[in-house]
Image 1 (cartoon, rainbow, N blue to C red):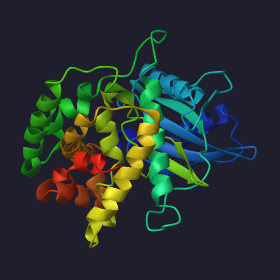
Image 2 (cartoon, rainbow, N blue to C red):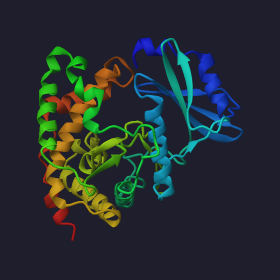
Image 3 (cartoon, one colour):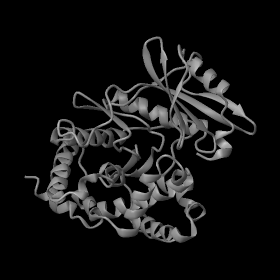
Length: 333
């Protein structure tokens, strides 16, 4: 998080925002990389408070996010529900100097983060559930129509992060901006349809869902945007997993991908030709993550080791960048 934004957020504002959702104890900070995320209790119920600076998203953009999340929940997608404030609003705005923070509160997702080292949790039933959840989200988003909103979510290529990538990258990593442009050009040559493009989560990784008795609950839809479904799938692939440090990783990857796609295909059909784009999508996600790390000052944060892994993969490549996902898919039967 940029220091000038951190300096704008005062304890009184945090307390006032939490009180709008009937906090009965002080909010505790959970994360401050992109947004300020807190946990608090309202009576005995655990809640998540998210404070977003207007330089990251406007209030209308956040309202559009929350409207879509509510739509997904109505359609059976397991997600953390946004809650109304005392003013019966999904968002509350708090002016600071010539900008503002937007508060939103969510139900606490039951369960815990997945333990990928525990075979009792990280196993084929979980892979299938994850794929099924993604497939349902992609299927129902085709029916979402945000015409009632003042502003809808942006398309992925409109993201300021992508448009100004060079501004965030240090000189010795500027090649990533050139590589990004090449990948963006590749995707721009394909015309989107409802069957392969729509409003998606954009960040379903192991830090953005909880598992409870084998069931998944998604949260953190902050990055949702109109994007290719294959790019959304790419984010869920285990690119940064310790799996690839082990002998026999390919068999484990095939197992993960096949069970994932079994679940996905139960809910949604995606032409298998898109699987040929998946390695490119993974390279794209790696570059976007690298740029985002610099934008959020991750190299100087407690998450520096993750940044170093992202940079290493960008510089040295990864087995997934050449993996034949279509072949693995065809061997499902």
